[in-house]
Image (cartoon, rainbow over all chains, first blue to last red; front, side):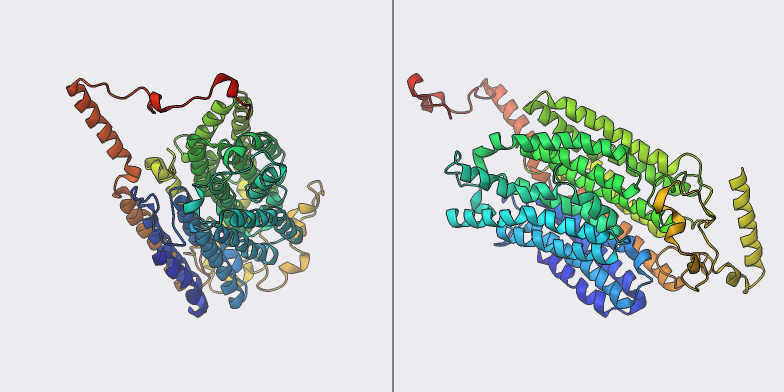
Length: 460
Length: 159
């Protein structure tokens, strides 16, 4: 663990001490070395069940895919932000990269935390750099409202979570995940326990987000700069899923009855947000609502608590992280050239930027869960396990899959095909940097097809 | 057809200007990349022209100058050509050669993940062993049925 954490902390001296003109080169190289080192977490010793265990931090097959994803995203965020931050004063550039790195630190600590209170503190800590990134570096005036929605929706869920965790600590004497897997729930029938159950999960359901408490997500994703959107879509949403899977251990037999309304909301949300995607005019807003749709599937997979449901949830979280982040990067390449996110104004780009159209195509195919990509793997496992839970859900999940395919296709056809608008006078060709960014998103996704057991969790 | 013609005329103009010497790049400073011609307003407030106020095209350094003018080998990383080149090299080396290639090889040669292949081999070994000994392959019951204590029919409660 320390061989990743110490180099990550050392990114701060790199950021602040490197001469100005080599800032981006040095931080890109350093963070990529940290990301390569984080691949050592994939070595899973079945004897202990945990990877790199110590008293306070350990990874298991649920958390190490997400932790590696968090480490992989930071160099990608740095590469993605390079263009739009480059014309700012040097100190501000260093501050920006410091915020991204501090997010990496909090995320690694959150995913590897062995104590649920540590996880809670890190979960809350990730809010602050994200809020600063959205409100300081966002492009429109709506970013202040977006930041407010983001903070207060998350706090709405997480303050009850704090109370619930402290109650659990008081009751059992420990919040260590090693020990909590063996406790029994004592009073499953009382109203107090049911409220405690809701309090435990509400924060993560808001974070996922569950349809119904999802309003912060389109605002935050749209108003954030590209790095903010990337980290939000790729990793921060997965904190919610991860938290839910960890909390399920202590929530005992009560989940069988109490999860019903949330499963229904999640499944219904797939259809509703998918339909909203079909009507979106703003490019980033469409990608944001598609994130809500995919996360609805993940939430329903987690709430039914079956091995395949959990496995499908982990796979879909990792695959969606890479695919959604790739789409936000593509949206940013379009935005940097046209300064508009309106899809009607930025269409027909295949004629001008054909290579980028190839990346658009691949990213959209990933989003609509094309086999053999892991997006399909995860979706199919969740759909099958939810069908096993109740046969009627196939109507919702099947329709959701259809709608996902249609809005992904709509996204591709609107931005790439069709007549190029007349108001483009000239446009920069695609930069090497942008091609590299897309390659670094999609090559891992393709490689995961070859060794998917890295993501299967410990249930499969 | 009109658009293609417009682009090729632009391209020809750019080529002519680039060939005409060092003073050429100054003429393209302040060239707008997005049309500012008044639109019908049908697209609403989020039109492109509203995002670039009209004085922007006059101010030096704020208008859209393509970095490819000064550095035809611009990779997208930095305006300084040397930093741009080295940044590209570092990003590709550490991103592709180290992280994906070396990292991918490392992951490929990791031992049996979750002991799944061992479990398969062990199962096959036990099956051949039990078939050779004439034993059943597996007990039908997971738990020993004599050890299960069921409640009496009257004692069932609805929980």
